[in-house]
Amino acid sequence: MSRRTVIAYWLIPAGPVRGFFQGLINDLVRQYEAPSFDPHVTVHVGSDHADAAESALGEAARVCKSINLKTLEIGHSSEFIKTLFMQFALNTELRQLNEIIRDAAQDSSRYELNPHLSLLYKKIPDAVRCELAGSIKVPFPEVLFDALKAVRCISPTSSRRDVEAWRVVATTKLSAQ
Image 1 (tube, rainbow, N blue to C red):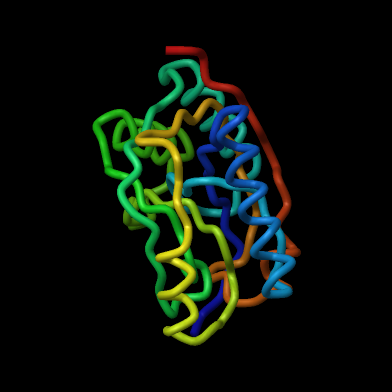
Image 2: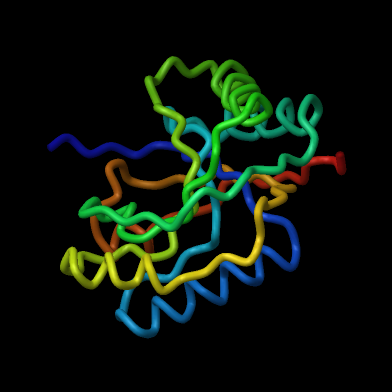
């Protein structure tokens, strides 16, 4: 499997909701001795160009306002970066943000937008993942996202070491709706 360095563009949840998800992630990290990370929804993954990342975030912040995403369910998979996650509904604003970032970063990668917020990165048995997914209740019908980060990372991310090597290269706030 070919691995490369990329820039991942993250949508960050606003204030109290960010705290809720960070607390949930931190609890799972402690319980499963897993790598820690910030709550986020990946909007695009593209080439490793930090200067393009800054301009892409700037353009996105200029054009887009904060985004509400409808929560769907807690899901799980055998994929390391989707061990346990909150799935969101795709909407027009998120598609537009993805296009703006992709165009501003001058990046033609074929990233498939699938809005989810990971809660745990760890290889664990299917039965444990299934039980965990059933035990987590998210108390919001939708989540407001009000910031963006560009993060340099290895793709595909497949280990704790990969997660711990992530580095934020740019951040910006989105204006209120």
